[in-house]
Length: 319
Image (cartoon, rainbow, N blue to C red; front, side, top):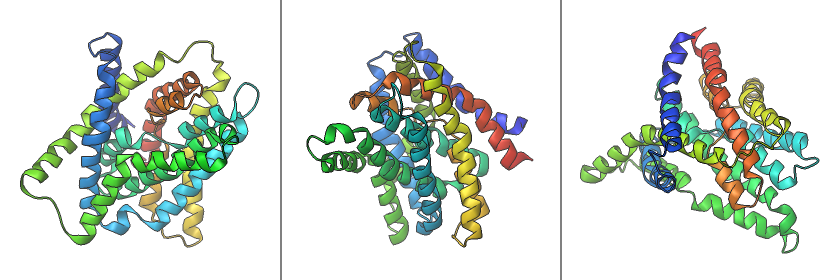
């Protein structure tokens, strides 16, 4: 298990540094969105493009991986809403809770971490999960969150707005361009390649530092009046149920003839064991949900994942 901690500790340490820098005002409140923009629109798309460019198309968008991970995402959304939509938790709040239960922090944290743990071969499988999380998971949860309000204007409005959000996200487009480059053999050269490489190299440290800063920013919304019962169970669903479900469904799918390898199931399981995506709380705020509750779920899942993710890596890799 020590070898797993040796990999995970530096990643969580960078997150802690970002949190402390924001908390001690070494990083101003106004600078945090700028860091997030740099990662979201420049560094991470460059990294994903380069991964896609150097990964065979069927490996980066494998049908078996997409099918298994999509089914698990739908099951997690349904399970989380079924367990949490009651009392003071509205459908909108339950939908965003489902999003953090089914949407791991793959781009900012998981991609570099799992590549360090299991090697570059993990990139193709994880690219598939990012596509599913942005296009399918986020769209469904945002549409559900707006369902009641949309009844006044037609539910097509909620669906259209959710799909528009997915279309405006730069990460699927970076993946698509990388896949096209891989398929055609047309790759950037000279200064353009150098720029993309420099931006991609900056993605991991800046993304992890940004997670910490965003978590501090989110913690300001996580008021203490929220009962533990409204956020801790969802964090545990993310860290324990999601990876277990992915592992089981992956094995069953494999037995039924779905084209998915043991290595891909392992990568999917570790991806599902990641903490919740840290930027969902901002979406919750944008759509008028209880972003304090969402912030609590994200904070709890990130803190607990230091142990649960390291334990999952030990069980799957070190034993």
